[in-house]
Image (tube, rainbow, N blue to C red; front, side, top):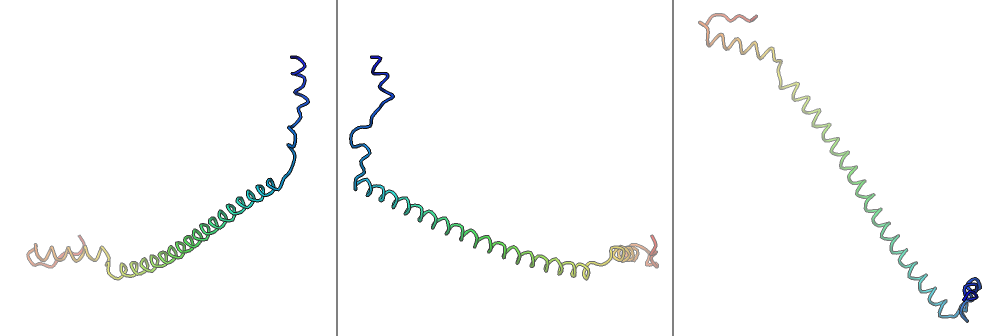
Amino acid sequence: MPNEMHSYGHLKPPPHFFEFKLAHLLTILLLAGLVASWWIKHETASAEVAATAKALAEQHERRFLQDDLRFQTLESRMDKMQSEVVPDVREIKTKLNIMVELLDGGHQRPELHK
């Protein structure tokens, strides 16, 4: 039994183990072809996804820029309208005081400095 344990250090491969045949070469070529086919399909799909994502990002960027320009235009129009339409608060208060005095008072001349 001890001799069998020592024999593990000198293991020999089975006969014809390292023999290379045409079937082995064809199997390796088939596997290499399958791997190359998968890799090409993977890279093509990946490139399509990247191109689509880039196109979408560019489209969104253009849309954001257009929206920003529209908002700036609307903001400037609103500022212009506000400056034209919204009168001074003091002017409104004075007119309101005059109306109240005319309606409520004895039709006397209103006091403007209350």
